[in-house]
Amino acid sequence: MKKSVLTRYRVMAYTTGVLLVLLCLSMIAKYGLNLAGADAFTKVVAIAHGWLYVVYLVFAFDLGSKAKWPVGKQLWVLIAGTIPTAAFFVERKISHELEARVADQTPAVAKV
Image (cartoon, rainbow, N blue to C red; front, side, top):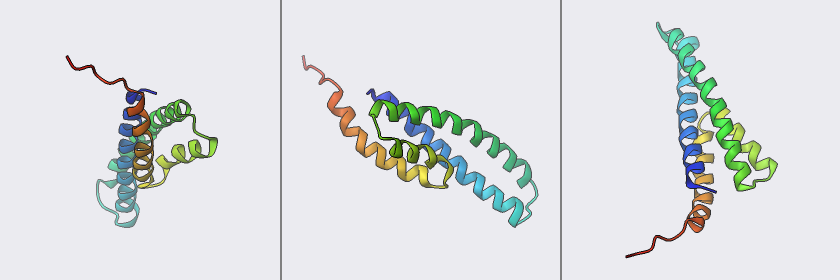
């Protein structure tokens, strides 16, 4: 497994997590606080999160298939993008788990 597979998953996990937190806050501002302008902001963030979540799913599935995860673990990683802040915790756990495996697979650079 290449390090780039893990890196793109990490980028999308953070992006999806941040957008989901922003979406939750904008929904509170829109429906709970009735703030002006929250409606437009909520719409933009919801659309961005929706499209980028699909990209997150593709990258997470690619990572899981290359890491040869069991189905349960794969599903948990895929669902993490729908639970506010879960993507951050799952990404951190997955990264620590896979960074050692990626480091073992990269060839040592020969010193001249």
